[in-house]
Length: 113
Image (cartoon, rainbow, N blue to C red):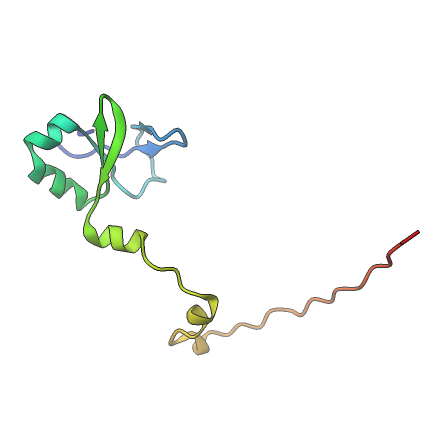
């Protein structure tokens, strides 16, 4: 949803029920814009511009149905997960000092009666 005076997207909080609640908040670092299907069909270029700032939620009969985002953001979100061994083999990690304290685990007695 956009602010009618400025034309800029309002920040919102995406709740667990999948609906956006438009509340200014400092915790939200992404601007989410909401457009109806009709608004999207009439002005695709503004939807593309809004997707540069964050996801664009497209509604159908008032309910969220699709999300428009940039291809770079899509690749980032759907990127292949690395294995732990690949992550630890990254360049530059040998420069990090990491010396965790050793943990002693004492065995417990087991009563099998």
